[in-house]
Length: 384
Image (cartoon, rainbow, N blue to C red; front, side, top):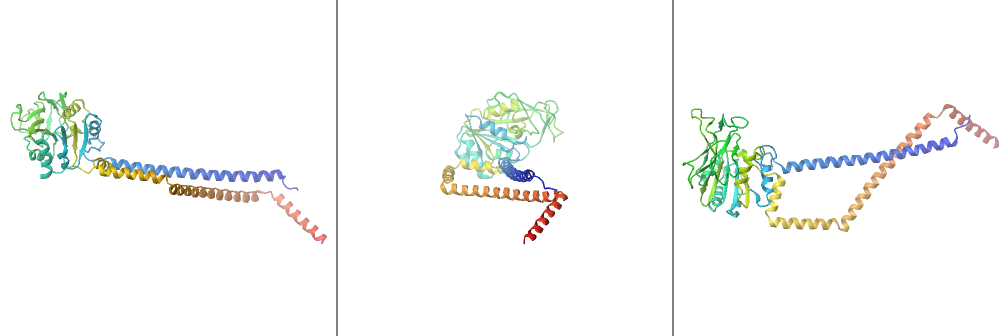
C-alpha cells in the first residue's frame, strides 16, 4: 500500500503552520485584553480614591453631596460672578474681610474659643454680616453670646399642627416684616427647627427684629404646659457697625432644603449686597484631602509659584533625550516579551499538532513504511 500523496502531507504542514500562527495571534489578543483589564481596574481604583478624597459625609459639609450636605449652596454661590465665595478654615482669616462680607456659620461641631470668638466679633464690629444657623447644640448659641448679640437659640424643637409641610415637625414660617434680608421670600419651610429667644419687642431699630415666625398654632414640643403661639425662627440685630442674623434651623442651607423656592430667595437675600460670601468650616469636620490641598494652594502665592516651577520642570524633563531613550528601551523590552510569548505559543502548538498527526496515522501506512524500510535494508545488504 502506497503512502499518502505529497500534497496531503504539504497541506498538513500548512495547516500546522496556520494553527500555530492562530495560536500566537490568540495569545497576543489575550495579552492585550489582560493589559486592558489591568489598566481599567487601575483607573477604577484611582477614580474611587479620587472621589473619596474630594467628597465628605460631614453634616452640613460643603463637600457633602448627600441630602444633609451643603454642596449645592457652595456651587450656587460660587457660580455667581458678582460674588466671591470662600471657605474659612481659620478664624484669623476674618481679619482680611471687608464690611461687604457675609459669613455663614452652620451648626458648628466644636465651641469657639476666645480667640476665635474675638476674630468674629471684630469682623462684625467693623461692619460685616454674620449669619448663625443653629438648632440643637449650644455651640452656635454660645457664639452669639460671645460676639455680643442679644438673640439666643432656644434648643427645643418646635411643632405646628396647623401650618406645616410634610408633618408637624416641618412647620412653615411666614415673613414677619418687610426687610431687605427677607427679599422675595414670603414663607420658608423648616425641618426639625428650634426657635429664637429675643429680648425686646422686635419691632424697633436697634432691637432684635423678627424676620420669619411660625403660625400662632406652633408650640415647643417639650413644653406641653404652654399654649400655642407664634414663634420667631429668624431674626436680625445690629452689633457694632455690623449685623447678626440668627436662624434656628441650619437645615435651611442643606441640599434637601436650599432648592425650595422661598428658602432659596431668603438665602439669596442674605448675600444680595455682599461682594464676598464665606462659609465657616473652622469648627466642623476636616475637609477632604483634595479640597483642602486646592484651598491651600489658592491661598498661598508661594505654593502657586513652587507648583508652577514643578510643572515646568516636569514638562522639560519629559521631552529630554534621557527620558525618551528610557521610554524606547522599555517599549523594546515589552515588544520582545510579546514576541517571545508568541513564539513559545507557536512552538508548543506545532509540537502538539505533530504528536496528534503521528497518533492518527493509519496502521496500514505504518506497516507499509516498515516493510519498505526492511526491503531497502535487504537490498543494501545484497549490494555489499
